Amino acid sequence: MKRFLKRVLLLLVILSVVGFGLLASTFTAKKIDVEVYTGDSDRFVTDEKFDAAKLPETTLSIIKCGKMMSKEAFVYRGGSWSETYESGMAAALIRHPKATFLFDTGFGINVDEHIKTIPALMQALTKYDKETSAATQLQAQAISPNDIKMAIISHSHWDHISGLEDFPQAEAWIARDEEAHIRTLPDRELVQQMKGKIKWQTIEFTDGAYENFDRSLDLFKDGSIVLVPLPGHTPGSLGMFVNLRSGKRFLFTGDVTWCIEGEQIPAERPWMARKLVDKDEEGVRRSIVKVHKLMQRYPELTVVPAHDRRIHNKLANFPAVER
Image (cartoon, rainbow, N blue to C red; front, side):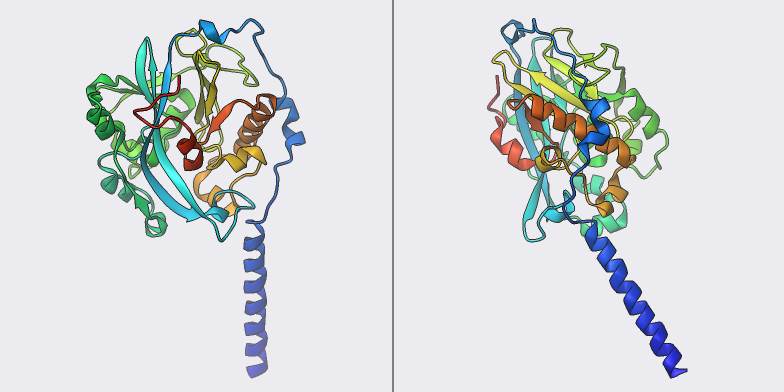
């Protein structure tokens, strides 16, 4: 009997070691095989007559509204276990002649209540600093939250919509596929709890191909703000190009990756993170490669992952502006 118990214990130890080894291997560096997605990502549509000088005078500011801390290893495959990663929670403020609006909203005034809507395990593992909300920062510069009539939302996760209720006059613009996804979510999700408080507007990508995307929406029909689908993290995740008169170009990519390395290498999130947050892992890989190909084609393009504070710090922080 003792021999049998020893063998069982040894087997359990071996299985535990093997299991731990397999889990650890999912954090090791591994590039996405770009060639697998070549057909989806290499067909670029460009307009040789595009002239930035003819764009309307548009400005862009980053509003930093909070941060969360983690080990870099949890952010992308190959990240360091010794390096701490500062995950920024930000809104982008765009001022166009036809509208002043936000892209995502960062942590809102009531973030302490909002974080209670995420699963208990994630709450236990989460440490955050709520800093100052976008609405409060705007008010400090004599911009009333009531003046913001539109907020384009990259996707419906709580940390991107927390600030929505601070802008009572704003319509929340989401992609059609994201609207359908929201209908499948449980009542505990923040986006479900906000349904009665927010005016929702559905986006349709009706303007045909743009760069290496087969669908797009030129928001003001002047080439300055172009929305594109970036599905995978959620079914209706979207990105936003901001093209300024100076020739500067930006692409806000939401949570396609949590950091710029994910799109540069390219590399996805580790297995554990993917299982927690990504709806369609293959879809995420396709979206990552699209952005990766854009970065190769346009080295001057500034790609802005939603949570990479290092990138946020390089851009004009409100009230300063990019123009």
